Structures are given as C-alpha cells and as structure tokens.
Amino acid sequence: MKEIIKIEGGHRLTGEVSISGAKNATVALIPAAILASDSVVDIYGVPDISDVESLSTLLEELNVSVTSPSSFHFQIDTNGMENIVLDHEAVTKLRASYYFMGSLLGKYKYVKMQMPGGCYLGPRPFDLHLKGFEALGAAITYSEGFYEIKADRLLGAKIYLDFQSVGATINIMLAAVLAEGKTIIENAAKEPEIIDVANFLNNMGANVRGAGTNEITIEGVEKLHGHPHEIIPDRIEAGTYIIMAAALADDVTIKNIIPQHLEALTSKLIEMGVDIEIGADYARIRTSKDLKAVDITTQTYPGFATDLQQPLTTLLTQAVGASTIKETIYGERFKHCEHLRRMGAEIEVGSSRATITGPSKLFASKVEATDLRGGASMVIAALLADGVTEIDEIYHIDRGYDKIDEKLNSLGAKMWREEK
Ligand code: EPU
Image (cartoon, rainbow, N blue to C red; front, side, top):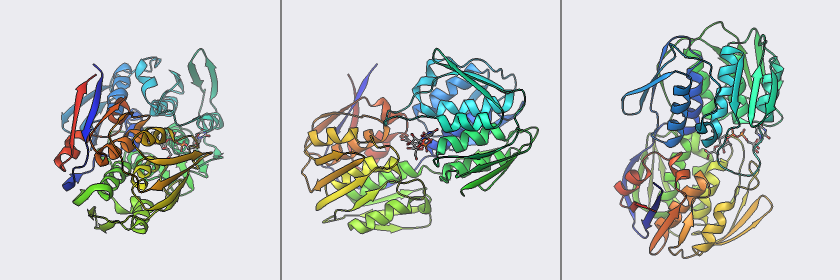
C-alpha cells in the first residue's frame, strides 16, 4: 500500500520533542553486532525507521535472531549464525547494507553480496572501502551485480583514505577488528557516529584507538563478545527539528541532543538571527523574526553537515536577501530545489551551488521527497506553506525519521497519511 503525507501549513509549533537514536550510527551498529561470536548483543535507543527493518531482514537471512523485548531495545543473537550470500532485496534498499561487507569479511574472511542501494545524491562510489579491504589482504571480484570478497588471512595494514569517508572509515574498522596485527586508518573521517561504533566494538572486546581523530589505530583481537550499548542521539534528526522550530516555533524545546554535535548548525542559526538557547542536552527555540541570509559550505564533521543542507534550504527561503549553499560532499544534492520552486521558492542551482533569495511566501503544492533529507526539506516547506501540501515518495522520509508524524503533531502541526 503506497501512502502520501499531507500537511496543512501555517500552524505554529509549541512544546517538546525528544530525539531518537542516530540512524547513521544504528545502521553500522547492527551489522557490527554480528562480529560477536555466539553471543547476545543488546542495543538500546534503536530508532523506529525502515532502514532498521531492512537490516533486521538481512540479519534474519544470516540466521541471526533479532528480537525487541521493549521499545527501542534490540537483542541480536549470533548463536547459529551462517555466512549466507546476501541477495535479498533488502540489500538494495539502503546504502549501509555495505557494512555487512566489512563485518562478514572480518568474521569469516569471505562475503558475497549484492550491490547496495540508498538515496541517489549523485555518484556514490565505495572504492575506498574496497581499497581498504584489499590492503588488509582481500581479493575482490564483481560479477553480475554481486561482490565477492575473500581472504586467506586478514593482516593489519596502513590505509590512507583519499577522502574522509564515513562509510570507508567504519567499514575498514569492521574488517580490521578481527584481523591479525595493527591497522592504521589515516585521513579517517571524524563523525560522532564513528566514535559510537568504535565504543561499541571496544566494549565487545576490540582494541580501536583514535576514533574521532584523523588517525584510527586498530589492534586486531581474536574474538568479540556481546555487550550492551546505548546509541547516541541523532544529530541530523535533531538539526532537522531545530530548523523546523527556527521556521515556526512559538516556543519549542528539542530534547536528548548532544549540542556539541550541532555547533556548525546552531552557530549559523544564531548568525541568521534565530532565538535559540542551548542547554546541556537540549535546544530551546522561540519565535524568530527577520531572519538574515547566510552562506553555507558543507564539509566533513565538524563542518556543516551535508545532511542538514537540504532542510536548511527551506529555512533560507524565509530569510531576507540572497543566501548561498556550496555543496562539497555531494555536488548534485539539490533535487529538492525543483520542488521548493514549485511551492514558490526562488532558488537558482548551479554547479555544486545554490542561491536562495528570500523571503518567499510558500504555497501548498504536490511535491516529492526526492531523497531522505530532501523529504525533510519538503516537510518544512509544507509546514510553512498556505494550504494542504501533498508529499509523495515518502518511503525516503520513513527510512530515517522516527515517528515524524507523531512528533510534529505533538508540537501542533497538522500532518497525516493517506493511501495513494
Ligand atoms: N566517496 C568516494 N569513495 C568512497 C566513499 C566515498 O569517492 O569509497 C565520496 C562520496 O562519493 C562522497 C564523499 O566521499 O562524495 C562522502 O562520502 P561518505 O563515504 O563520507 O558518505 P557515506 O558513508 O556514504 C554517510 C551518511 C550520509 C552522509 C555522508 C556524509 C550513512 C549511512 N550515511 O554516507 O548520510 O550524507 O556520510 O556525511 O552514514 C543521510 O543520512 O541522509 C545520508 C545520506
């Protein structure tokens, strides 16, 4: 059954909203859990999103049992696990299914799986992941849509990443924790989700040092065991609600956040004139008037996150003057702009750049969630627009935003789903 989201715009937001566990940590932690030998791994704070469902399907394919004894709590039992070829369509539903490459290679020295999927944000190669596996001693072949990666032994190595790739950093960590000897990842990405995965692996018995810096050192160990883990809050979900509040709050508090993870965003919002108070684990936003135009350049962490560029585009349509966005991570991540224009926004897109001139009055239209964060940008536009907006292709939104309807409606929005 295909659904669309409808949003009646123009309602101010008031109240509190609590942020869920980080999607981009969760989608690595679930494949990482299978590295534990014949153990039960408890993960707390698992968000209710469809990417988690897809990964659970893949665990079941591998004969790993997944149960949820209570909300947000997953129990992953690797007793009886088998290294089966991953050819289920769930592999193609998200990009992060490629973390099974690192974890299965690490555990069994062999993995065969389909090409992973995920949002189209322009070309998204994973050559750096493969380069890392090869450096550890693996041989890789690709034939008819399947990668086969195998090694007799995995031996620690020094691996320099040409780009600070989140995925490559995590995937190489997963492959290296059970390898023989020392692996050093140079020019590693520094995103908080990488630290979360390293902490998870260390608590399971791994020896990973330096996560969160440019150089990560992994001393291989023989075995990993289960250990409970609480996922960090989702900085991108938090940033999305902060942007929504900046657009429409009378008085909104976003709880369960790590403010340090959001500094690139909150400092820009302050520059725009948003009334924001940052506490130890919350952000409170009150009515903001006369927002000012700003310039943004997306960068790897701790720079401005590309994942918040799309939600922010919508807010910039409400700022006075011309704002520019320079996208250095995914040069083509501007598909949402066409739909924003349909709603009345004035946006010019050039090569890896967009210029947004505001303020524009937005009006309801029929639009699409072009990808996950593009979907969030449409939701914000619909909340601002006059009339009832219809958003199609909402499966993108459900991949990464836990109970978005419930959370927004509790703040006073009017949002519902209808069968298409
Ligand atoms: N890249 C390569 N080769 C590689 C890997 C990456 O050229 O082997 C390039 C990419 O094409 C891109 C850049 O490096 O231009 C960044 O890619 P990265 O590997 O860092 O991204 P990712 O691991 O595929 C994660 C998040 C994305 C987020 C990016 C950047 C997950 C599951 N996904 O992707 O999140 O945009 O890091 O921060 O962690 C989202 O949540 O909406 C999302 C797309």
